[in-house]
Length: 184
Image (cartoon, rainbow, N blue to C red; front, side):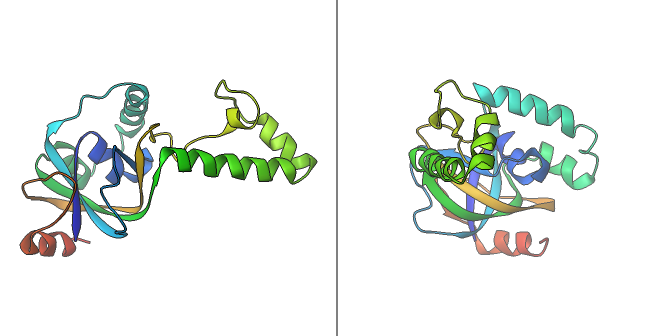
């Protein structure tokens, strides 16, 4: 099984399905053509959260406070240097492709008739005007000028499994993979 080391709180946000972070931003395509299960390894060090992510993290923390009551959720929240869950990597694309795909979808909707046109016109504008002003990335968590690793099916494991993290998309040692798979 492949693994990806991500700093807290982003790693937790991926595994905690109700946070909606099913996109990881990277400066290059670290997955290549690989698609399939990826263990989420929570790094020892925390991330320095900046930009629009500050508001997203704050919102999710406030909304999630009561939900972070199960032992598994509390363990995942405090774990460092451990695998906390597994997701399925389903796509990788660059921000320009993501934005272009959404633009094409909006054009098709606009051209579908009066109802589609009204739907597009009712969407909020990002300041650019017209169809381009309505286009969005695949996720609120997606960043411009980055590759988006798109995940699905997040599964939190009950007992985080310690392992030393690595850069890029790496392969779990056999004993760690077995410990993770037993909990899925």
